[in-house]
Length: 165
Image (cartoon, rainbow, N blue to C red; front, side, top):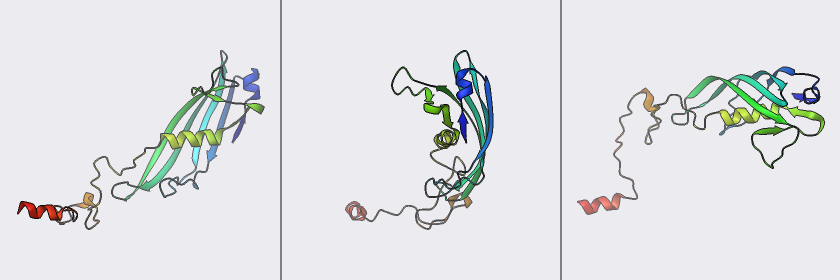
């Protein structure tokens, strides 16, 4: 969705509400396509006292394998974002403002996509204390112990154990 902000920047409108859906089902993250529902976005662009501010709320379901045990995990996320919008910047590369240049058009889809990807956790776990998989047999240790001998000596260091004997 592209927002035309000409009336907001000119002062003809003080509020511009929006509501849309984003489809990120083709977005790959860490080898999978985790966005299982469309992203519902709603919010408004408001102008007051010379400031133009965008506020948005997004809601979506996200499903990906746990980074430790590979079990599928589905979560519902609800995020809020806000940005100050500007026509021009006095300082180069001022990260506090989103620059809306020629035509007063803002690509809302791209802005929200970036916000969502930056907000998602870097490590995705099924639970905080996930035990992961056994390095020997591959059993999910959250389901119980596997019975493997976990005190195996690294084959590269096995020669050193002969020095102890």
